Length: 239
Image 1 (cartoon, rainbow, N blue to C red):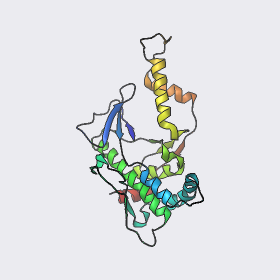
Image 2: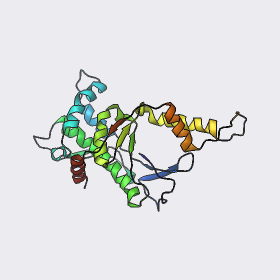
Image 3: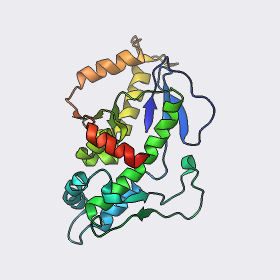
Image 4: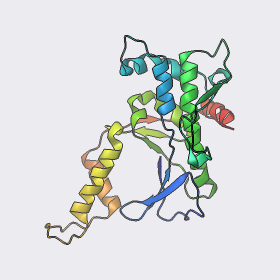
């Protein structure tokens, strides 16, 4: 997860194994909360409940309504997603295994198990963001989803509730990283000086360039607003 700080934000102090540091084209700090165990465990639990006669996409389509209908506490299920090591959380290198605890006859359902897997990774991501918040480096204003998770857009509501922060889902969000790289390349070509002549008379700042591009390609995003009762329930599970 890339957390974009305000250009006037206080700098990050010290070193955290959970955070890498970059910057935008104009030097605005970007702090990357990185997880080696992303959606692997989540996808694995979906695959465990996939029928022999359906594709992965069909399995997601069938199972996600049950995930969304599952209560925030997953009926008492808790999961650890460490199918690989996780240096940012001091999970040592070596053979690792994911774990699900608290099974009962009532919560042994696909919806409960899959949401517990999703929350295990989401909570680890929240812990990384908390490192930044504890130093007042960032204050979350919105989350823009990209990557594989957006193939099930409704899961954005769970993310909004876990982080108590509005979530936006833009068009082509599953290719957000590729789109971002293309935007950076366009800015470099159109707006920054080059050793070679490219008839470049455009001196737009990075924020202005982004705003103008957004205006040209504007589409109404899908948005999710935190639900107070669910926010409290997820916070209780997290702590």
